[in-house]
Image 1 (spheres, rainbow, N blue to C red):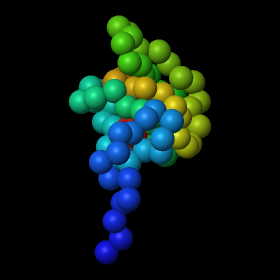
Image 2 (image 1 turned 180 degrees about the horizontal axis):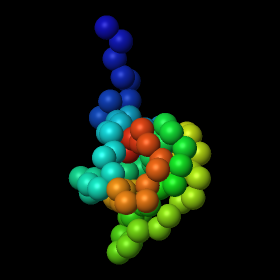
Image 3 (image 1 turned 180 degrees about the vertical axis):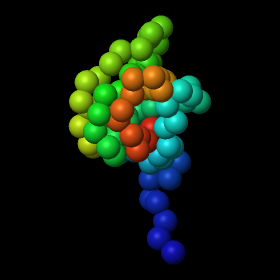
Length: 86
């Protein structure tokens, strides 16, 4: 069985992600993500890192985005199939 030769190494922000958790709009993530993946394009109301409020990312495209997200607001968010990457 293959093993991850980098298992246990400290992971930096510019390193590839090694964990993905589904994002449920309306809930706060347990930890701030390193990035997010969007599977269905649309608007996303995101709370980033230490922000107190949400900001709308209009027409967020499908793919990985280097955004340190703490929460996704359900109201007004049309982007879907999102993953928090760690």
